[in-house]
Length: 236
Image 1: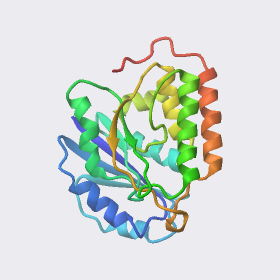
Image 2 (image 1 turned 45 degrees about the vertical axis):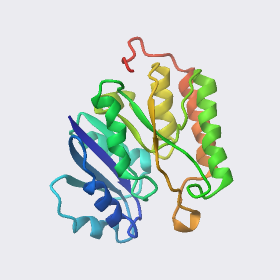
Image 3 (image 1 turned 135 degrees about the horizontal axis):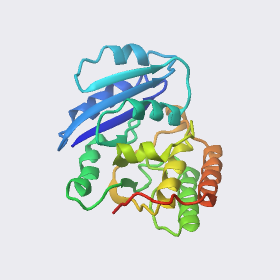
Image 4 (image 1 turned 120 degrees about the vertical axis):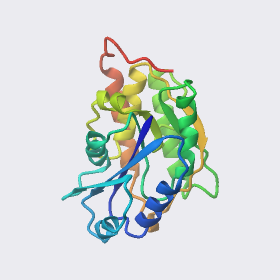
C-alpha cells in the first residue's frame, strides 16, 4: 500500500522545515509520498520548500491563498497513493502517530481511521477552544446518531478514492465538518485511535476562530438534510 500524506501550508516559514523533517523521518510501515501545497504563502515558506531534496516530496504552489479545503483538493487531485491522510504543517500533530492510524487498516479492521485527541492543560491553549471542538463533535453525534470523539481532528485516514467520491466543496476549515458529515451520512463510522496533540496559541499563528465552529455546525446540518447516496460505500 502507498500512503499519500497531504500537507497544506500557509505562511509557516518558522515551522515548515521542522514539519517536513519530522514527517519524512518516521519509520512508516508502507511506501509514502508527501504532497505539500503552498497555499499562496507570502513569507519565506516557498523558498524553504524549494531547498528540500527528497524523492518522496512533491510541492505544488497556489499563486493566491484559497483556504485549507482548496489546498487539500489540489493535493488530492495530484496524489498517487491508495490511502491518504492530512498532516498540517503547524507542528500541533505528531507524524509519529501516523503508523498507529495505519495499523487497523493494515490489519483489515478498518477502512476509515480518525486520530482522537485527548485535550489536557499542557495540550490546549484555551478552554473555549476545547469547548468549541467538543460542541461541534456533539452536534455531529446528535444529528447523525453516532458517537465519534473528535470531528475536527486533522488526522483523517481513508482510501484516496473514497475522499474523492465525497466531492468536498468547502474551501476553508469547514472541510473537516463536511468530510465527517458525508461519511456519517453514508453510514461510515470512523475507527478512532488516540493521538498526541499540542495546540498553538494565537501569538503562534493559530488561525481557526469561533466563526469556523458556527460554520461547521451549519455544514453538518446541511449534509444531514441531504438524501443519503443510494449505494453508500462499505466501511468498518
